[in-house]
Figure 1 (cartoon, rainbow, N blue to C red):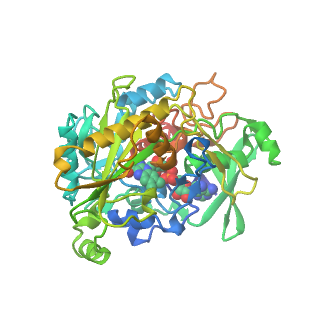
Figure 2 (figure 1 turned 90 degrees about the vertical axis):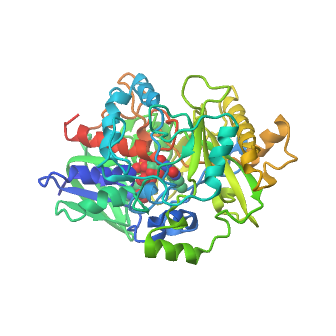
Figure 3 (figure 1 turned 30 degrees about the vertical axis):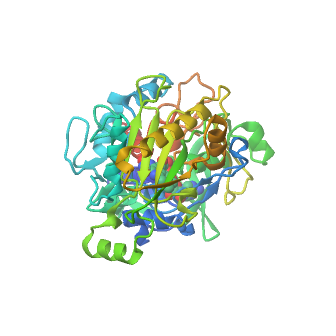
Length: 528
Ligand SMILES: Cc1cc2nc3c(=O)[nH]c(=O)nc-3n(C[C@H](O)[C@H](O)[C@H](O)COP(=O)(O)OP(=O)(O)OC[C@H]3O[C@@H](n4cnc5c(N)ncnc54)[C@H](O)[C@@H]3O)c2cc1C
């Protein structure tokens, strides 16, 4: 018998496993559907490019065909391994904008305002630059400046400056605006995933048990109280009992699936799949938000990109000396800006510069050398939904991503602005010694109609789905959770992961998810 059962050893689940098992009198079980994180490509930062093809550590979701995107199904990678998506992500350490959290509080997630969440960001953070008013210096999550710099990365920063944008040396500092180097979730040149940062140091504790390749199938209830979890390992079924709480940390796709499989969700939809309704909770699976992204790709006239770099040389230098391109997260630089359409004083567009050709997430290899500028609109109005495809826990859910679905067409207008601004930066003199042909959008793509067509053909996810089990105020029927992350309508059950966000933050989502879990640990222990 355990005190807590945690489902999912991702960004949030590993934090909870560590924090809750700090008390030797508390017994914790952590169930993870994927395998251990033994694969060397998980730990060498540049290995992320190779992980794209590793089926064994990825749920490999695809959205339903998107009418607004030429009926394409977009690839949604999600980590299925210890560390979850933090073991396969691009490691950019970004918190979003301080005002995003004040907005959460305004939306009914009381207590999640900036001044109240900042201590949890700091508690998590082990920034190699040391501690300061806004940063933590000795937290479990390694955060560092680049060890290796591709020659094109400073060129990008210079080009952004030439285009009139300010520079910054800290996207998580007093102001988020500007262009510069990303700090990454790395330590001594290796990836600092939630598993290496939080789980590994706790693995020796006798009161923490971790079971990998364990697929949670449903939560068990007695008189409306969550008492355990049914799961399977290699097709064999098991059930474990939780004395205190069951904590779902399966991420924005799987946590709503598990709630629905357990009888908590939109009642008509559950009945359609023959699932007995425990709580009619219309918000489960709804409010799905993601950052849609568009890439401009330019051929490069010099052989300085990561396109044709020798894998063997990179791996040797990395494993022998922990140096060189192997330490790079590839997206070394980027920026945040307020476009001419920004609705308030927060940045509304983010850039990631990649000194390589990144077509179709790197799954489609283009010949020669080139560089890619990703741009995404940070404040999408479109919303999607996750639906059950069947009552079988092994079946993938149906993801209606809802991209570009807002009635005012603002999201599409902003994607076009992303393309315009990307081209403007790539056209600056700093790139002159390297600039070859424009491959995407392509020189023939001019004018509004052609750019919109390009977006519909080529836009992709930049991997930030959130919001499908959102928290909110008591009188909000569509809020799945209360602000303490407790599932409404039952007791003994919380959701703790990216799905709880009421609204997508203006930036990448790993650090915010880790912050959520750090604060959740205190809420669970009655310390907050
Ligand atoms: C390719 C990629 C690049 C990204 N790049 C960045 C970046 O550079 N910076 C950044 O900040 N963010 C980035 N992100 C996003 C960030 O990593 C995620 O938002 C964050 O990791 C989500 O954390 P989570 O705890 O909600 O879910 P996850 O970390 O995905 O964890 C969920 C875990 O639950 C397990 N699980 C699910 N269902 C079950 C079940 N039924 N039974 C047992 N286990 C289950 C999963 O296998 C997984 O391990 C990226 C994501 C991806 C995929």
